[in-house]
Every structure is written in C-alpha cells, then in structure tokens.
Length: 200
Image (cartoon, rainbow, N blue to C red; front, top):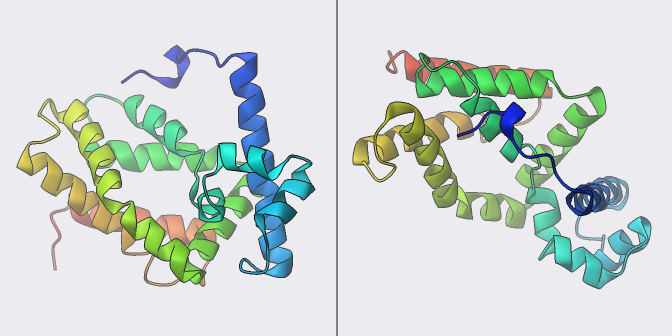
C-alpha cells in the first residue's frame, strides 16, 4: 500500500470528473435538506448542477448512491498505509481516522455529518449501507492483512476485520443526536475498547 505522497497525480480528465461528482453530491444534499429526500428527484438535482439526468447516472447509478458515495474512502486507505509500521492495525486505523478528519474544513465536516444523518434517517439508505457490510469487511480485511503479513482470507484476519466493523458501526446505531466530533470520539473509543481486548 503506497502512501499519499507516492500516489500518481490525477490527470485533468480525472480532476474534472471528481469536481462534477462533488458538485452533484453537494447540490443533492442541499436539495434533500431544503425539500426532503423523497420529494427531490434526479431531474431536479441534475438541473441544479446544470447537467443532464444521463450525466447524473454516469456518476451515480441511483439517487441513493449520491448519498452513500464517500470520497474520503481512498484518502482513509492512503492514510492507513502511511501510519508507522510498528502500529497494530487498530492503532493505524485510529491514527488514519484522526489524521483525515483533522484535515477537513468546517464545510466538509458539516457535509460528512449531513450525509451520515441522512443515511440513518432514510430506511432505504440505511438498508443499502448494511448491504455494503460484506464488501466493507473485505476492504478492512485487506488492510489488516497488508499490515499483519497474513492472508486476507485468513479466518483470524476476517474475524479481526469484522470486529473492527462492529466497533465502527456501534456508535452509528446508537443515535446521531451529537456533533460529528463527538461521534468520531465515540467511534475512536470503541476501537480503543476493542484494542484493549473488550474488558467488561
């Protein structure tokens, strides 16, 4: 896994696509906030961004996907790989989460929190997030395997990855009445509790 400094610089085409994707998601979240998720159509989102509905669908297969897409995923993966090699996978993940969220602007933090609250408030979005659970375990297992030197299909690695996902999801379903920093602190506390061996 390469560090962010060694990642190839995206070309102009990729940067333009990223800007368009971000604009679609930003306007979609604004419309959802102003008129509600169910009342907002793909056509309205496309019109707000001044693109065609077909362009919307090139970036997001469904309206649900515009909320579920998280452009921080590759940043988190890179930050995880950049953590010191003597850290355990959980310590590396905690460090990566701190580093990535510390680098976000206030607007980005607000957008991330808005997405999370929307996912939990809309039943079909919440179900889609749970449907992605298996692929999330696969991703975490791959990260753990790279750091531990074991195979991603090793049952110990997969159990470890599943425990991490459980620790990350526990505060998600405990409610979202707090602020994003408070939510992230609870998520970090869950990972620390797991790292300590779950002492009850």
